[in-house]
Length: 265
Image 1 (cartoon, helix red, strand yellow):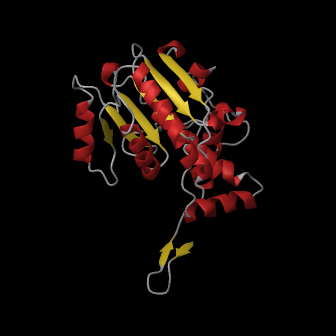
Image 2 (tube, rainbow, N blue to C red):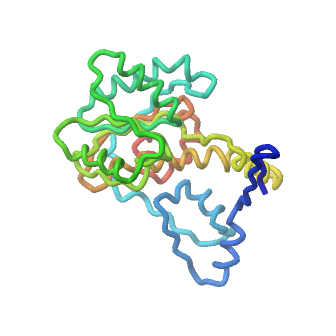
């Protein structure tokens, strides 16, 4: 039970901190279960969240695409929150260089609208920056579809968007409609009251609450956004991951079994 606000404007929210026990209570009598989701990676973490027990037989299949279809690399810039303003020019320069060296439509994903606006401001002040389009807060389905139509036009599209937003999942831009994806950050969510409560819950169980409630959801967002690029066995494109944390073995391990992870190895 989460509470916030004051006496006049109190807010009460009943939140389910984990559904693993409820899911297991339903599936334990079945011979087998098939789960459908746009992203079930990282695999081991998904198993735990879905109530899997040790010894359960689970099948992990590799990506159907060839890693050579994806040209992926890391730009190790420190963009932790306390460093973002200082390194913002470096981030903008890395984005500018990448879109200058690789033709075709591009989506650049950011961890927040505020940071997206800041980097966009710097990009617009740089020479030879193409026209930029930005995702807006509360975008309607009609507005989203209008932007997606631009990817079918001859003119080049450079879209600035947010991880977990309207364009990081559930869109399909095969072929030449999308050739480059740039992801800035490891996607850590904002630590709101619900996230803090979940983190405290897992910490109380002797588990790593920060890992389960911050690191994992962030990397799921990253994997989903990276998945916008290669949609068929003939697609090719480039992926640029901007964040020094992508060099950490623990972060890279979370990408195992994905096309992005294979392309980086």
